[in-house]
Amino acid sequence: MNRKFKIAIAGGGAAGLMAAAAASSAGAEVILIEKMPAAGKKLLLTGNGRCNITNISMLKPDLRKIYGENGIFLSSSIKELPYEKLLAFFEDNGVPLKQEKDGRIFPKSDKSSDILDMFLDILRRNRVEILTETALKAIETEPGKPGRVRAFITDMGAFEASQYIIACGGKSFPATGSTGDSFLFAEQTGHRIEKLHPALVPVKVKETWLKKLQGLTLDYVGIEVLQKGKILFRTGGSLLFTHFGISGPEILNLSGSISALDPSDEITIRLNFVNQYKDQDIKEYMGNLLASNTKKSVLNMLKSILPERAAAISVELSGIDPGKKSAVITKQERKALSDALTGIKLTYNGTTGFAGAMLTGGGIDPSQLNPGTMRSGFIDNLAFAGEALAIDGPTGGYNLHMCWLTGFMAGKSAAGEI
Ligand SMILES: Cc1cc2nc3c(=O)[nH]c(=O)nc-3n(C[C@H](O)[C@H](O)[C@H](O)COP(=O)(O)OP(=O)(O)OC[C@H]3O[C@@H](n4cnc5c(N)ncnc54)[C@H](O)[C@@H]3O)c2cc1C
Image (tube, rainbow, N blue to C red; front, side, top):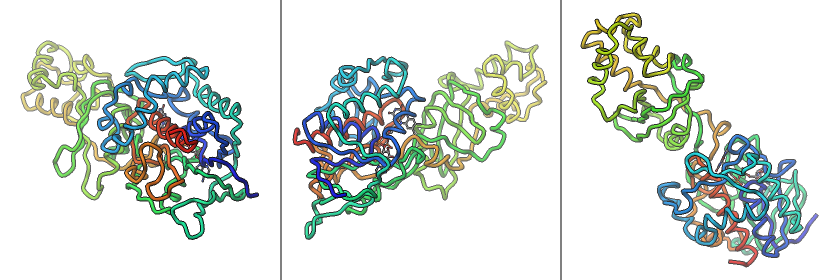
């Protein structure tokens, strides 16, 4: 088979679907090549099956703060597809939206399948050909012109087009089809890749006592990450204990930065279980708490401010007999208790890897692409979009937003509309 189209897109995830919708809505003849039996496998998993499509912070985004230095690359696409226009795109295509905690935007139905179905409807209406179970295998450049793609070579033959878009995702959750192919094609065509690492991923620690807290969530935990005695990152919020380590939004958001560190020097994660009192002198606070609970055991006293398992582990780490009455706690014991509550040390032991990561940290350095078209600076009819780019956001809808923006720009500009 050797067929010709206006635009060939590889990868039917969030970015590829958006690229195909934008290009075909501008009247271009599009083929979408997807290696899995169906498009949008990862999209269906997003937001626990509810799809957190964006965040209200994208109305007036601080791109550097949200995505790091590379976030500035998105400035042109935000102008072309501002937040209100993106929301209107979903609603006008039959998916009413709602806002939840922390500004997260979801479909009102709470179904990610509504988002996927919306895209598939648009593509059907616009007569986009979707070829599933077809993998892009190589990119063929024009003879004597390495700066121009001639065809996408797949296991179903060659597809020729005027414009080509690679949206094959990153390396996270490979079971969904995202096995890192974008990076192979980018490297093959001479693009620089920023070091890849798992991001938005649960963290493993060496301390086995943590298993006693498995399944427990604490809402006001202070988190510091240290290496060689220096605090590198500091945050606070809700923390979930797992059987191998820690998770929850704050840890997920920090995980990419931690996994990118050189692990040859030990990395310590220091937790403060009573971060809500961080502005007070904790020893004085403990003194007052002990004084007003003199008849209680130290364990029962702590249970008044922490869930039982967290209270028990804090007393255990302090070395104090949990049954000892608060009234007879010594000054040293009070200090040991304060230290155990505010300075719980965990030793970083890696992450659950790409298999359990919601995002690929690093990727194709966007400075090699035109921010107005997503096209390569040195292959003039090849664009990249989506998670494959080194533009990494926190949880909260920001990563899908990046996929919508880059997919839209790639698709619309390929159709000659930008
Ligand atoms: C469990 C989970 C929950 C998440 N929840 C959210 C959320 O609620 N909000 C949010 O903003 N982000 C969320 N994310 C992140 C978000 O899902 C990704 O950033 C986004 O889906 C990436 O889209 P993409 O199109 O770049 O890549 P993908 O969705 O990975 O799509 C790439 C597609 O390319 C196909 N492909 C790969 N190689 C080839 C090839 N050689 N030839 C043809 N096709 C190929 C793949 O099969 C796949 O279908 C979540 C991620 C996970 C894992």
